[in-house]
Amino acid sequence: MQQVIHHIPPRAAARIVAAVGGALALAGMLLAGLLSIWLPGVATFHNMPMALALFLVPVGWWLSLYLSTWIVCGMYNLCARHFGGITLVLDDATAVQRPR
Image (cartoon, rainbow, N blue to C red; front, side, top):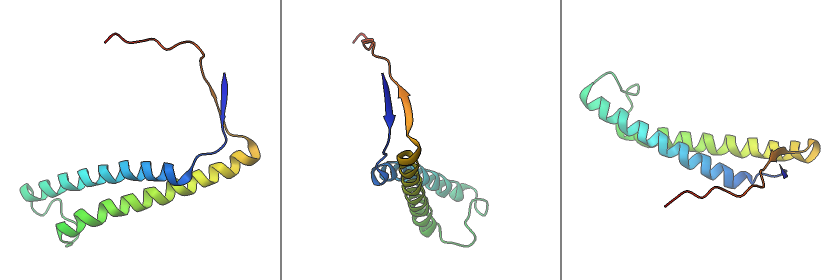
């Protein structure tokens, strides 16, 4: 069976991508904060207080990922309307049940 994706909801996709990216950026910044305790001067952010960097960097990643995903999904929807969407070929066979 073939299915064609003609529309991707931009706001829903952007929320998911931004949430995952923001969480990963926060984890990375917390790791950088811990490194700055043991390695002073090596993992600093150009004289920016570490507490401010721990807030601004994940927010910046979240905002940039949200906007870029929203724009890309919107562009895909416009192109899919004129040229057709991505075609997925799905197998109709029953799923194999894993033993519990």
